[in-house]
Image (spheres, rainbow over the protein chains, first blue to last red):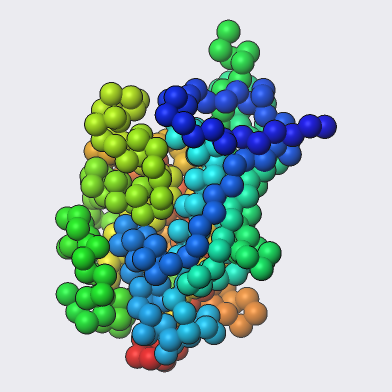
Length: 165
Length: 187
């Protein structure tokens, strides 16, 4: 079976592209990845935006003393990791894609300097009918050591061609 | 602002950020403790979170979104279904932390030493700029696994018409008692 990579195009002419049809997805299809390097600046911005100002993220001096995770570094927010994993789906399918569930586990901390890549793959396709058709995308966030930092199961509702007729 | 928040104070620019109790190391004694949580306790928070454009813009930018439907209000006015920038699904985090300012139920989310193992969010309808979100919170579970204290809360985010917008099952690993919290908070 051939698979395809979804979401690579980024030019201005696809800014308002329509949602993909569920019919066009295949299990195993890969979504364009998102990569980032964890910096204190990113953590600070996320902490301010999310109001999660816990010192384990926001206070390097305290983190060095407290070592909540056994490391002297601040760590990225789990919810920041969850946001990026969700964004893999939203950037591939477009911001109007309707995410209905995000189920995430955080398996390794993301310390300052960690290089993280979020990889998404279509796992299941659910052609339920009645406008409730959805796909499940499995997203793994992997660091530069190949360790899984987080994993998310993301349900996204998509239209079907038949429903458009 | 305190010495604990001075380093990032320049990032607190929205009305909610500036009014927020942002020093988690100063009010930790007011947070609920793992050992005191009562499973089944449920309450509707008396406050309402009004989703402002500046809150959403701040969140979308912080996670690196660049699509104009997320970060360009003028573009969104012409192209978004409601004419407002889109709310990233995990923006529910901001709503949850805003409601958790001590000493309310759920303030344990701010505990120094807390760790985040897993989260589940189910979305019934999109959240939009302009929505008035209220919160119904229930202590869902409290358990020990491999010697660590876990707590799971159920958050029901409801709009101005009392329709559920999202349901979150949020779990944290917490220090088990006041002494353990103090060890972190005073490190």
